[in-house]
Image (cartoon, rainbow, N blue to C red):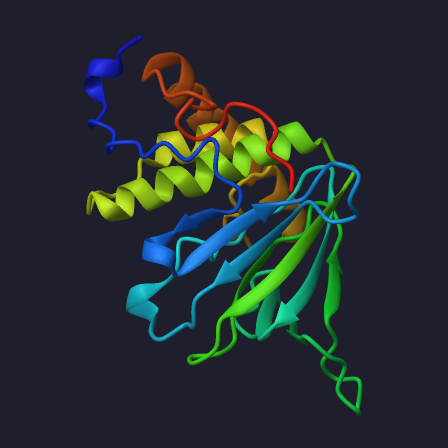
Length: 221
């Protein structure tokens, strides 16, 4: 391996025993449910004050190769984007409005580009996530490592490594969604990109799928 070529990682804060796990100085968090529960985890996002202070919990466009993903808003409101459309596909709220325009849940099928963000500049967003089919160990390992690493980078004022992020994403079968003129082409190119960059990051640069500071086993509520 050529790990000496990569930038030094940020100091890793040991959060492996925490549930919930608190990030961004208490502004955001993730709580994992026990494996028998219907939903996998609950996430809290801070208000979206500006584009210059985006929470680490707001993902870029991505897709799930095999899984259907369902979001359920508990508090606040969520803008859910699908495809590469710059406008929200749906706005989810904790309760269904009289005109049924806003509802608390929405489902994204496999191989569908999507991302989400807090729709409010003043209120936090709390929502649950369900994945089907689900492997709780894989999901918890991925989210603990992914968000733990991003938060440690933010604390250290250090840019995250694309190679490390792709190693995490590839291990969870979640390609980063690249903009392409046709969706089918985008799905293929995005997956190839994630595979190639992750392979280089893992087998050449020595990045790992998981770190003991972030994940050591199941910590269900």
